[in-house]
Length: 222
Ligand SMILES: Nc1ncnc2c1ncn2[C@@H]1O[C@H](COP(=O)(O)OP(=O)(O)O)[C@@H](O)[C@H]1O
Ligand SMILES: [Mg+2]
Image (cartoon, rainbow, N blue to C red; front, side, top):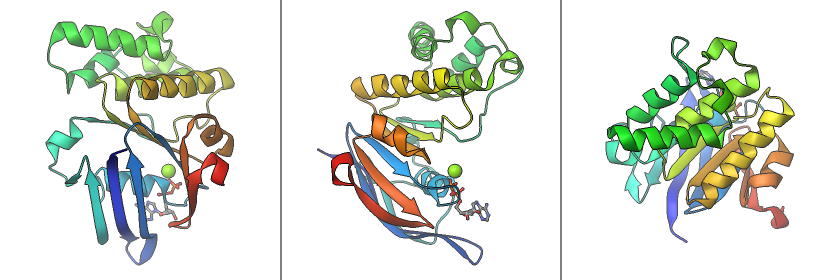
């Protein structure tokens, strides 16, 4: 299997504080890689360095075989991101939010309409399509956040702790949705501090603690 992501000796400091200590790992095409670690271990820092949202002091990052930089627009066009903190527009409805984010990538109106409907279906938000975010429960809001990040059908998807503080029903819906996207060909990087979640959906796991990778392998190897 091809490597979609190759990280070598990634080193990140916030001031004097070393947040990532030369971490290296690969992500293979078609897998769901789980990045598991406690709060403050460096999961979001890793994701944000990979996406070139943060600068870093050492190491290299390749995505789709090319160096990832802040102006790698061709790479970014094929990526979907679901951030740890929900980021949607309060003024827009569920439908309009998804349509807005999808529209950043998909200009054709008919195709976009189909994609937005498919995203609504994926996270089961049909009954709420005309709601504004403030009227949604925490779990439904998370599902909207995910729909906004996946509607354009990225081939590589980053999800940073998408199930924190959601009810069990939404959590199952989210995990099932991620599995479905993966089955349709999307490579997924999934961060969490819940062991049972990586066991449920991930093919391979990397365990990170205090900015270091302390274990990696398939579930069977752990
Ligand atoms: N902007 C920042 N400035 C200083 N320290 C930070 C900043 N962001 C994160 N950190 C620190 O870096 C470490 C890793 O944080 P983070 O990547 O957010 O962990 P995780 O996502 O695993 O919870 C933590 O000790 C955190 O306090
Ligand atoms: Mg985090």
